[in-house]
Figure 1 (cartoon, helix red, strand yellow):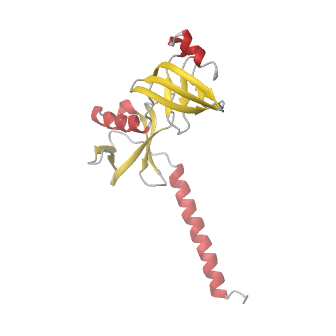
Figure 2 (tube, helix red, strand yellow; figure 1 turned 60 degrees about the vertical axis):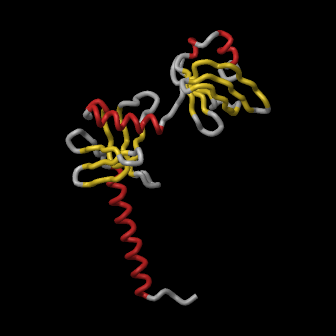
Length: 193
């Protein structure tokens, strides 16, 4: 292999330096906390059921809404991100209640879509076979059958009485109060508790 010419060597050094500068700038942008408020941000519905954002002088035709603490603080520290595959954060809503009512409702709609979690109202049956549990339940959206693994992370406590059940497809279900289930229903969950 022939030795590298001086110009090629210099071009390579310049490229590395440019990449380091770009990386440094991108890192600084990622670390900067931008709070979205009623004064600097305006959300609007799009034709496809999403929301857009005008933040300062910049407009985003579609944004994603993510909860930073989805189980403990669903109305605080809401991350608004670009809708592409990188999902780069645009800014953070510190408290949803600080926005106008119409803006709050748009954000809540997006949260309900992203964090869809039916409430299990009645446990009809849970069968254990070959390392899987087959559930037959009634949820806040009607009758439902799903499968979970028998591993320890299929059913987790979110508090003293609150449970979250995750099926093999990643769908989540909530049992708001384990002790409000009947004794027979709680016995069916003994496999997990």
